[in-house]
Every structure is written in structure tokens, then in C-alpha cells.
Length: 413
Ligand SMILES: [Zn+2]
Image (cartoon, rainbow, N blue to C red; front, side):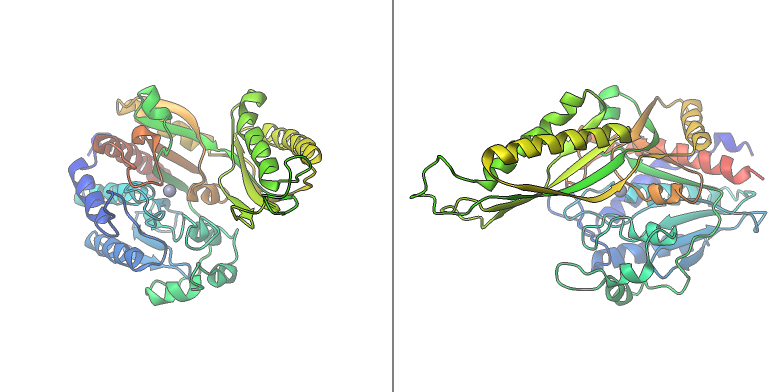
């Protein structure tokens, strides 16, 4: 059989995604399927049923990562792996994560019904708690598996109700026996929605990310002087919120000023005491800077600190900055990325080279195995919201690229 002609079943992929979207469905058309919730459990149960239907060998590890293995002619050689995550953001979308898992499932179903035997085993995976919303940090399952995050540290993380990750994993019945420790992987592919507007704007079907941008997180603390708003004249106030407001605008103007490919965002702010008749005495806010160019990101941060210092001095509100977390840009395996591009072109899909502005499980996989991603367009560039949407034919296109990439990697001796 000419495996190059093999295609996934787009209608089946759509039906599968629609069935999954019913688990945790929200009134606004999205899904609410937080990690280790009852919805996550129900989605996992259904996923397992589908894995059994095509006779995959199931492995559940101590982190609750679910693997399904399809045997190859050469059982001893490292497998080709593909997947993503089943969990969602609170009131999130129907495509983020789940497309990568169901796309890989569709590829495996296609191999199964064609009774195709590959050289290497092909595996599918659902990584636990990618979103990091209920339990931080994000990408916990893949991080622990890749040896970059301690298992017991993960078990001890609590949600806002004080429930522990380890106990919730146990409660939903997915605390597996298998050690969450990486084994050799020949290649890892992750199909995912773009979560941005670029592919749609360019009118392209398949995005080929060369990697993921560097991400830099900071926490900023501004000290002012709290006082009664009425009796205190405007002159001589030390209003921490006004100082923060000026600083935040500097963050927003920064990318334009740097003239490069960089984004900077203040997404979280805490004002104290947050009362309408008290001059704000203290403000804490966060800064997120992302760029493929790590030098540029670091330069931007240094420039920002100078601006912050000037504003703080003028307003008499001392500022303190902490670097909370950072990860330099991640370049994917060039050979695999080229394969994604070439495969998409051979299938007749338009392609667009790009970088990913969001983190994915592929970040951790990339540190331990050759890794590449396949992006499909997000309608309106919206993601992590209920209206998140992608065209079914684009999902099908992405799954076809994935299928062919898996076949090529699995045939390598
Ligand atoms: Zn995702």
C-alpha cells in the first residue's frame, strides 16, 4: 500500500472532537475541564475507551499521563510519540490541547483500520495539567516526565480550595503505577491550534513553528503613602496606583520603542488597600515579556527598569522588581520542522513559517527528544475563551500532516 496516499477521516475527527466537547460543555459554547476535575476524569475515561477500541497498550504513569502504544515491527526501537492535553482553561475553548490528542487518535485509528504495520511503535499521549490554572505550574505532566520537575513537589501543589494535586489524582483514579520518568523517544509531534491571528491573516492553513519564544516574568512592588482622600491635597501625594499606572503604560509602549519582535503585558494587578476613600499605599503587578530574541527581551527589561526608577523618584513611590521565572527561546528540531513543512506542501496545504508565542508540552519534550509542532488557524485569533474556534477542514488538514509525519518517523530504522 502506498502510505503517502493515506488520509485521516475528517468527519470522524469532527465527531470525536464534538463528543469530547460535550464533557464540561459551557453555555457559551466552550468547555470547562480543569485538570483532575470530574470533567477531566470523564474525558479520560472516554479517551481510554477509544484507545482500547484500537487495541493500544495503555500505560498510566504516576503523574496521570496516559500513553497508548501501538506495536511496531521493531518493538525494541524508541517509539514515535504524539499528543497534547485534555485539560482546559476555566471556560476555555473546544480545541486547545484536545485537538492534538484527538488528532493523534485519528491518525492511529487510520493506521489501525488499514492494518498498517510500522517499523517503530507509535504512541499517543495525554499530558496531565498542561494549563496550570488549577494547579501551578503549567505543563506539569510533561515537565515531570521529562525530568524537569519533581514529582513530589507536583503532588503537594494545592488549588484555591486547598485540595492537593496528588490527592485529586488519586481521587479521580488516575494515579498510575508506572514511573513518570522519560524513556527514549525517536520523535515527538504536537498538533495544536495557533492561538493567535497570524495564519488567518496570512490566509495559510498550516503553521510551521521553528520554536517557542523566550518568556520572562517579573513581579513589581510599588510603595506609596496611604492617606484619607478628602483632606490630603493633590500636591505632595505619594499615590502608588498612579505611579504603577505610568509604569504600566511604559510596558505597553515598550515593544514599539524596541522596534523588534517582542510583546510585553501587564495582566495582573493588586491595589492596596483598594478602597475608594484611601490613596493607594501599595501596588503589586506582573510583567510578562516574550520574544524569540532573548537579548532583546533582556534589553527591554533593563530599559523598563530605568523608566520605573524615574517614575518612582518623581512620584516619591519606591519601586522593587523581582525576576520571578524565565525560560529562553526554544528552537525545535530543524529536521522535523522541515518535515512538517515539506509534508504539508506535498499534501497541497499552504504553509507559513512562524514562532509560537505560547508555551506547550512540546517545550519539555524538546529538551529530551527531537520535537516539532503543527499549527492550524484559530478563527479571529481567539483562544482560552469560549468562542475559541477552528474550521473542521483545517483540523483535518493538521491531522493529515500529523499522520504523514508519524508514518515517516516510524519508518526510520
Ligand atoms: Zn494547549
